[in-house]
Length: 88
Image (cartoon, rainbow, N blue to C red):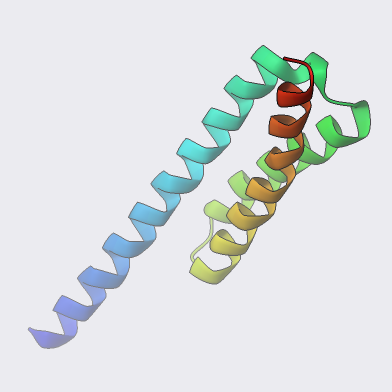
């Protein structure tokens, strides 16, 4: 039973992480749709690439890779936030 408890916990953590990844990707796409014209083409392409990478990595089971992809997306989205703030 203990073994199954650990397996269930790991599965739950992976599912939660995948849900977080999808939410981050979705939110970023919404922000790009609304404010994408305020950020340069290079930054927009990086953000879009990071969204795609995150979704691709989230299909797998490597939690560290998913976390790393989420961190990379968060870093690139900062550029979008800076651009929106500058143009207010």
